[in-house]
Length: 162
Image (tube, rainbow, N blue to C red; front, side, top):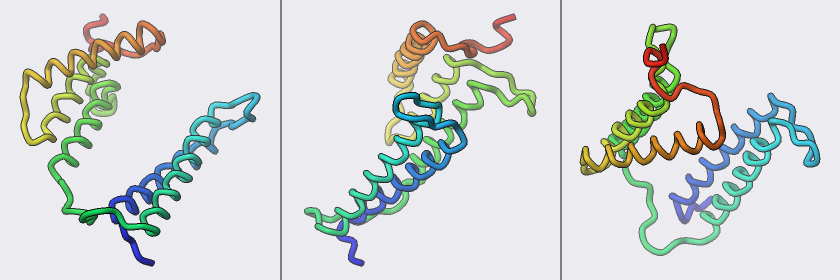
């Protein structure tokens, strides 16, 4: 097996792994039919489409070479760490950790934490730009999820609701 494009090959494998995980997770829910869709229908179809897309990308990576150097470089540990840390922080701020006594801080503070920590992943960190982005994302998320979709979850810290 000759891999002509390492980036495409591994991207295809990643798509297939994520798609298979979604499809497998969807089997825990009622799938239904296309006429009467259950809660597992969309994740199952999305997972299968991702597997198919990953298969196409992987096969194309072995069939033809791309122009220029297409080798996988060294791991970028700094961005990897900050992006993962930002997502974990968002989950903790949004829902809290009741087992450890950490209360939910809500959507707005969760988005600020997510944006500020994820901004550290780049080469340059500009606090003013990160705060503006966080403000726009917090306002947009509030309008989309709370006002338009009317989803019920903490927007502000739980101690502010009392």
